[in-house]
Length: 453
Image (cartoon, rainbow, N blue to C red; front, side, top):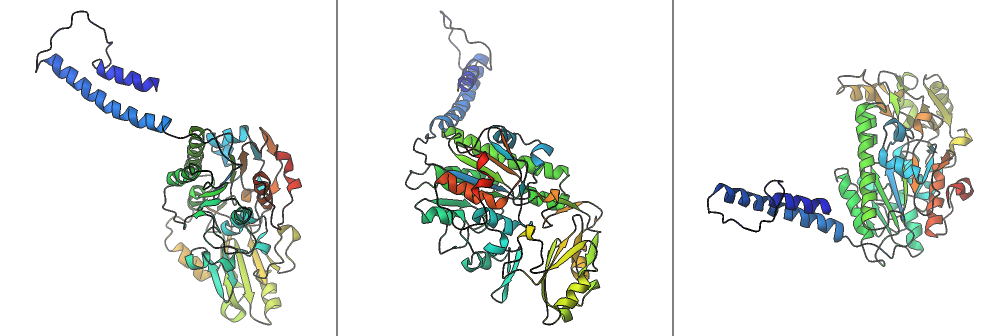
């Protein structure tokens, strides 16, 4: 405020020259140079006065919150690899980590895709148990895809109990500014406040929307808030995890965090809200020229009922009587590991779900697995296939797939570095902070209790 007053004074005092009080005022003739100069100064003063009023409104009109209940803001930075904080030097996230908790990395669930992992974070369940076993899922005689709004908003696809349902079933309010699963009425329940996903909504608006929820009267104010940003995933896919473009995307994410923290500070609750920053997965460099082709080993039409494709994981449904043949043939395919359902390594927690395909093929990091027709369609609009891109969805043993976890607030220790842990643990952390009884889940609070005060 002192700086603003100084600017006003400088404008009034003839473009920054020192004001001096005169005992013998001199009359100023209309139209004189002195009169014009003084008039110009008054105009500058008027403009700066408007600026001052606006600035003062931002500083003084913001009501401080004095009745905050235990509150969690869960922020997802899609595709923000565990090492981006240091690799790209993100100051706001570093500050939260220095004064809070940071995991060496958080282990995503398999497959390391966006929808399965966001819903794991929300429910504490592995994908085999919450039903979103991939970005593409077969059930009910149809295919769920992440771009199909009708299916995304259909509650029958979403099993388990996400944190916003847990909160609201136990008398608290929840809000979501874009988080996977929040658009569907899971167990018939939406968050109290939520929006249909639209990636074109400016991220700054999302932050301000969350702050506006905190400004609500205590009886209307959510205690469990989720939000989502896609910048690093978008840039990582297009340019790869080592690109300057991805660095700028990470710095964008950091700016959104800074905007949120500053908004909490003006409300007097920056050290009272528990902020948890996560990502769903990491990102690996991919050379699109390094491809293996499923249809080099089997006849897609004759041998399978359907294949759910991504470049990093392919779910294969053989025709009746063809399971062993298809599996044997696909074992010959380079740069991929194929398993029969029930024989997938236990560490991946990917055998139980009814929606998991009879054969699952996981691609070696840095490569893609597809068909010749799909590959031709992919490459027809790519003039520079030699340029690195990025991908995820691989086995979670790869270091490039590891996710970020940073937390700050009264529930967390200060300056604590946690050992790597699975993302199924986040749900129980949030329940503990909010005083909620967790729904059945695959986590165990004992694995992460050390980070809590």
